[in-house]
Image (cartoon, rainbow, N blue to C red; front, side):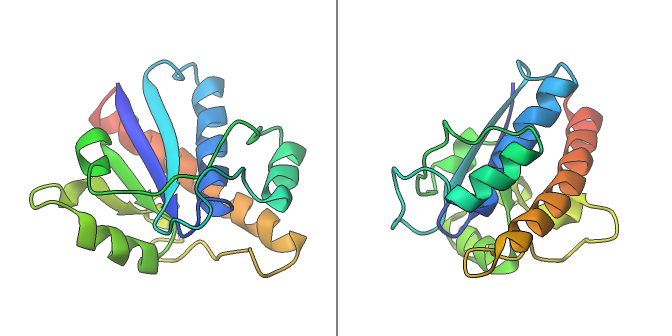
Length: 157
């Protein structure tokens, strides 16, 4: 079983969206039983809360259900549990790098490094913007999800 953790700041917008999108991609490809997917935030202020309603509605319009996801905080122990820890932006990647045990650095990735043409970029936080920001985030995450799946197939399946 390959295990993937998506991480953003509060775990209510970008990372639950990535979790839901990647889960839907895995189901479409018949791989849901071979890859475990979760999400977390580097911050703790939303622990236990559902995703932002705007993220839920935007995902639902694309056939992705985020309703069962609840925010949790990422921790150093995640590096022992997950094969891929995928940060939504450079700031969260830097925070995760500080938690990362020596020897586990290869598990930490930037989400858009899996999206051809967007490598090294950040998935912007749509929290303080309008609904179109959630659509743009979905576009980026959908591209990255396909690239991540290709990487997992190449290395693990």
